[in-house]
Length: 58
Image (tube, rainbow, N blue to C red; front, side):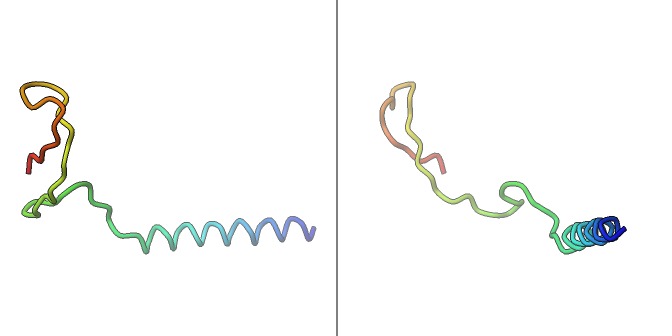
């Protein structure tokens, strides 16, 4: 009997934690947003006339 009560309390706590976590989470965003500047980054060119060099497309 005590094990069932403990299991029920544990399940209720897990459910409450999940609900609170979902409520508190912000809406996720993916990638740069409209109007944001892209930070510079270098890439290694592997084809074409610049093959083997590092360049930045930004």
